[in-house]
Image (cartoon, rainbow over all chains, first blue to last red; front, side, top):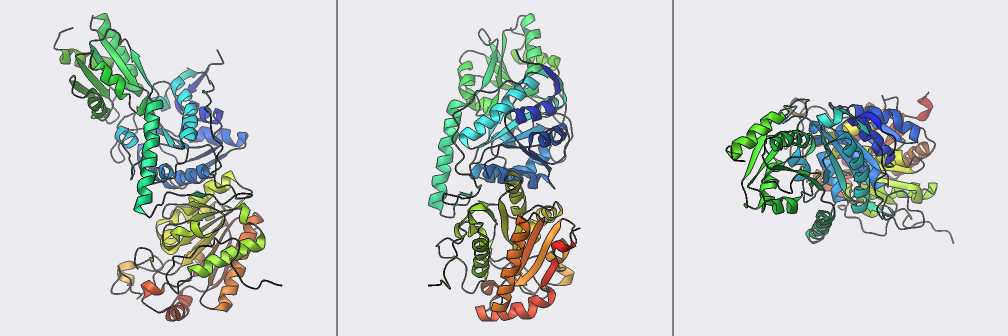
Length: 353
Length: 248
């Protein structure tokens, strides 16, 4: 066991990035993620790195684009409305196949929305969000420890696949404090970044680009990206199952909501309900196979989210009609209580255990 | 034998896609000649814009990074902060820099980013087919100002060099033109100065180059050069608007 330190989520995410070798951070203030850029502004100068507060989220993500293109491990963070502004840049980064890590500490929307925790950016994170045929790897931690582990792994995944990775936390993950231990992630066999624009001494010029004017070439590029995404789907799906062995009913939730579902599960189990929990850790790629398999075993599913129902669509697609999929959500910054979930499960099961 | 003409090493051996009479080719060449003369080709990273010069990354024989419309100064900032020892430049048109990218250029200058921007101002959107630009002159016709730009409807053209020269972080700001050989020589001298000041770590440098668009102006190449001289020079006076000597 290494040293365990009590840290606020946003700050722990920052420290994890530095531990992962990220020396460059470009950001813009927005609640509820400000502690992260503030932390980086304190720490990075001491690590011979660069913290830069950009003039906008648009500029920040384009600084990330430049830094990633010239070979650096680089990160930005924001919250929902700010992530919307970054979408253009994210599409370019995905198109140019550059590695970077983007943290979204989600707050309620749409529009200016609110500043309390939400999970209503699931569609934006996992289904595109910006233009074009592209995917982000999206990691959804449910504790500060997991956030720290996933942020470090995010840099490895990003470099390995040359793809942007998003860490999707909600305001709760960003704001709460928990003890964390910094553990080095499993190192991947990473290729040298010989494609980076860092001066062409002794080689032909490198070009970082996402423009393909000939449709034949763009189609070729899109299928190449598609194959990469298929590879990611094959290798990178992560999820946790809790008490699913004998479960007759399954809750599906990620992030903060999964912890509340766990409390509900304990109450239900104590009352004799055979309920289990499936917790996606990667929400793209989504644990389709695990949920499809569970559909052969359980009588039904309840997806719980802090939204009006976004991930539930992926649960339904995964279940392929084999079992009913119900939904319970709170939104706009409201957080569901364990009792609400207990009541929902009982209502769905109609009193039958 | 002394070589008196030929392609600079900093230009790729590739045919430009630019329209006949367009001055982008001259400006590309000037930048490349300066890179050759300063011996910085292998140390340079260029950022290409969106617009007519979107394919600049195919022409410059150095590392090149494409940017989204208007975002080149932000991309260049990212590159320069990672590689402060390299020479980083952006090549942008007036729609890119003076319209959609005003925030990025102003703040790159404000932060005194040690980059060089080549700002090609031809008073029109060329690539998209001749729409009104932020630099389109009063009375000038464009496909989105078919009756001529009017003060009442579209306001005044932006004077970027004058504006940026007010910023403390801007080290060198000059406006030049390429409508005749004499001015082309002066333009090259300014571009060279800008790169030299960047290398010397003086701060943000920008050279605005007045340029022609015969195709979208509806003029022959010769008429276009004359139109630039007669119409653009009075509104966009040439000269050095800021030099490092003023930077205290």
